[in-house]
Image (tube, rainbow, N blue to C red; front, top):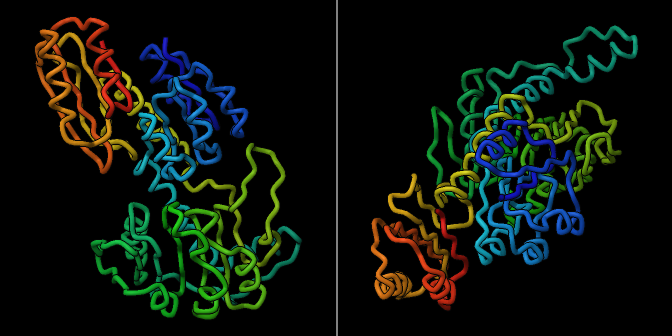
Length: 399
């Protein structure tokens, strides 16, 4: 029986889908450190995580039974994708399932900070009636600057326009503008005109330290700042100075460079206690609707990879969309993408009188993935020859 380990309080539907497919599932509420993870993955074929657990090259090297990792979130920078691919371990994420939840949180925080609701709330809880319009504004007519115009940024763009905001965006990749949004040529240009700056960049190494003292100084005085993307892209000491000096009129932060592993753990940050600052514990995608959708999406991807060999939307392997096999067996062969691999596979099958019923090949950079349906039973000698090919990374036989 295949075994799966699911960490970090995944939605129960994630467990149900895998168990209904005959997988033995173990769940744990928190994240695990490197040593704990290596020990827990002994004899485990599938791992499910969110953003806290780090799946490093050392972990992958120590866990030869592992065949797939499901990141039940958008980001995958917590997984060493290259090391996983080199060992034939497929990695899947949920790039679309929680975008609406993140966008709604961003909109709520933009309105709350622009109206200075945080300060009015704090005053009333302290027993002070502070009825005033000082510093409070409508979002209608103000300019929203979106840094990172991907799945979240584009949806935020559309909804912000419906509130009457003007939208500008900057992205290092070529992106199609939606609605009346305007693409700008540089981050500096965006900072100079935006009343609200919100970050929605991915977790690639090049984004580390993207936003620091120079960028906060470049913002319009009193502008609002949001980071619901990755903690390591912002210098939060510089943000603190910007808040205290009045250069930044308010901020909402959902992600931090170092986050507690488990619910209830202590949290420390330079941003605690600052005026007109909203701090949330990495809950941008943490709505019940989003977590259910993510649990269903990623577990279905893990199931389809296990049963059919489908790698569609894998973030590190060549993508093949596969349904139920057409023959008696299915050979899923992940290999180094060099000339002659397909010919070698087919020659081996022919030499062993194995007829091919169907075959698909996809490549992705240095990797190739060929899936072959065969009509006859496979003797162990066939699989031994295919596994011994110098280009072979991993061979799986799906029966």
